[in-house]
Length: 310
Image (cartoon, rainbow, N blue to C red; front, side, top):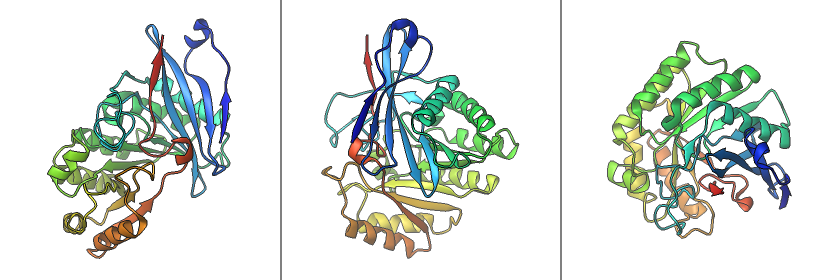
């Protein structure tokens, strides 16, 4: 692991926009995490940005907010309940479109892309994308104009289902210069389980209907993110319920992920994860597996955090 400090900043410099404070480099040789800083009133707030290379694509994992109010149990951004004990963190503020563009520029400047024609702007960092939907939309347009061969991915817990449909309509109306894919956080096979993981989630059948609308309207498959948490949402019955729920939705793919870090008490071993996927897949549901990059520098999914100082 390598740590790089970008140097000290004067107050006048930090007022100019988003600055890189530290860069952490993963031992995997391709992943990095940037600690970026922006002034918020009298406070210098820091947020984190991920840089990865996956399947030949250069990915910038963009934070759209400093902190997050969604309180998902597996996410360090809010540290809500038991897996990551500590102070409850909430949102400090949303980032502007200009700040998100600076965030991406900084990430690509400090960690240059291996293939500049295959850049993915992934709104999967800190924050709920649709809680800052206007700025996120403006950032997609600005980034798409700068990198017309790239694409965007927007992730949401689905707390604003109307916004999913509005985004689908905007995509089909050609408002964005690049393709815009959608990921929806599911994390449960029924409403009770899902809300125990994602407290602010809307009803699961309504969420799936909105995801289906996005897929049918835009022509893009939608991924339903599902982080396995032991003794919470990873049982055989959960898998059977998911299979029944998703078997008629061929435009949706269940993306099964590990809990980070692997030392977490809720981590599900590979054999159990394989069994879970096989049960769901046997219902004819499309599935895929995802393992986070950069977990040795706490840059995996659910591991980004915020900070602040006067």
